[in-house]
Image 1 (cartoon, rainbow, N blue to C red):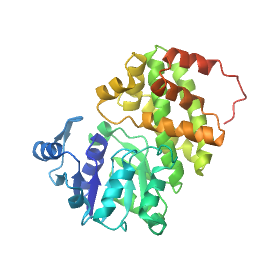
Image 2 (cartoon, rainbow, N blue to C red):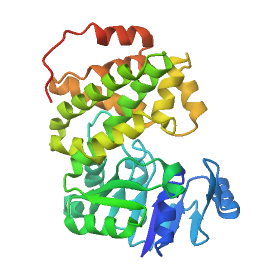
Image 3 (cartoon, one colour):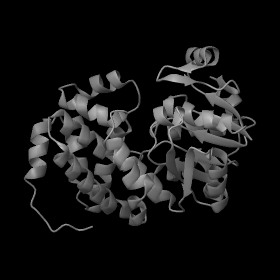
Length: 332
């Protein structure tokens, strides 16, 4: 198939390479003309030092060229970029082909999950064309063929099967799950908990603290997921517990590293600059706090993470505020 791939970050390139190796014609779009030329000529990505880009994967900085004749569109931009990028996409072609989301986030102010944003742009009549790929998957490990298991989901079984067929390899295993909102919600929310875990480790706390943050973080995600009509059991799977684990436990996670840098005294702007890639948890924690306050559901980890990033709260004071909360019965 001919696939227009939007986004040339490390995650985008690692997935686009899978599609190219599976025999598909893939053209990757990035806004930067210089970066497009560099990727095309060097066949290397600055964030993936030991990876060579397949020769049959091409690049462009022209969005119209990327999507004009595409049979499928796959995106790896940012959650904040979904609406503006796809508004532009649909000025170049009709919204009548499958669109596969791989970004993870919740739109600020609207509280919309990314498939809901797309549905607004594509129209309810094209809702069945929207799907996603999510789960525990560092780009660096996918690019170097580490065995990986992820989840695909969609509003229709046909698109769910399409995603599975497009991306499956002997080392990239895909489990279908029909709960699209649950899959996307877990992928978005785990980034907030990963920032909190990075802060905890950066402050010198141990595994006990991180285990508590992860467990109570998963509980927080399950509580909030009902605001988006998700099945809470989805959060026990790869797109919930699985993605939460890989993001909270690894230095490859940009959200975890962002938290560590905050604990080291860096400002959010300095930390983002040092990482050099989007830190989705810093965007999504605004949306999570908005959802919690609007619905009356307590989200203490999201709240203190938001306070550290946007209100200048001292990380140690944030930990104290969590420990001083009244103890309630554990509900699983």
